[in-house]
Image (cartoon, rainbow, N blue to C red; front, side, top):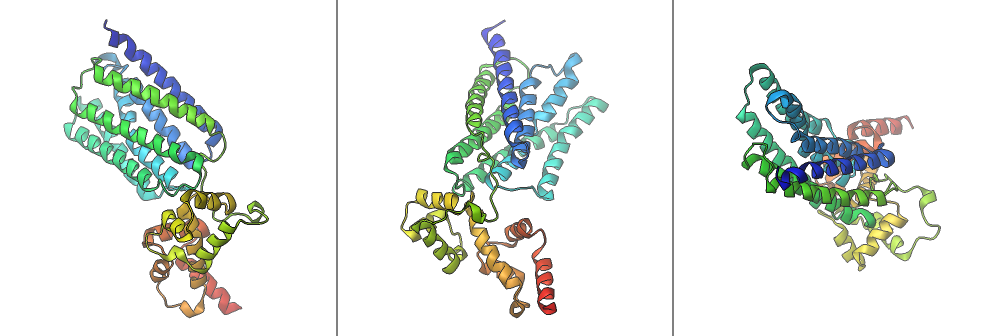
Length: 352
């Protein structure tokens, strides 16, 4: 028995223990948050990957191996959902996304059914699964990179990007190894080094999670800050922010970013972030912008003089880039579609 044969199970056991610790922390502190619940499911899938190699694909442990391997395949899809919920600060995921993940999850189930009924392994399904794993991993990392500037909570900005980057990078690397490396169960240096890196990264993430016992780590954006949460005397910067946003309607500009807002105010970006988060009560810059945009949209939809103006035109004029994000933001804020809101408000105006 070589050194790698001894080290490999030790690393797997240590990494599994750390992932269980990660799960326990998430469950203890953040189980009510959708992003945390998806993270818990993702971690169980990673544990399945770590344990799959304990079983042998032949002999009496064949089906435990197949089941664990099938569960591990779901890591990239759950990672993608996790990135969407965490970086977009979403309260829910739409049915289209769940349908895509479910369709992907059906592939390993079909593979298991084929093996159970015919004993055959389908290379075509295996290739589709690997392509999907790469696609989900890259999409999740892109979401994190795209949304990196929107986070207004300074303590978690770098941590979030590091966590998603590390998980996405490992998913891509492991998928590459599994696709292009031989599929025998011998313990080789590449897999052992990969497991060692997973162990170290998981330890770092677990320590980081322990530091974030407050709700800030998985904070969801407030629709609007409560009056009690606002300082009695807002700072000069907060007052200028309100003027630029509410009166000058800077949020209407296409592709408006926090960097553009800071440049317009002539202030360092970090000070603008602190003012929006600490004094105005917002945790996500896009949610901050959408608050002003939705105020304008509500006023337009309730205005009898704009009865014939298309809702899309109103949304685009208010700064929304497309209809999809607008409809989602509106439903989250009002619990109804823009058309329903308009009909209700115009009916109230006729009654009045």
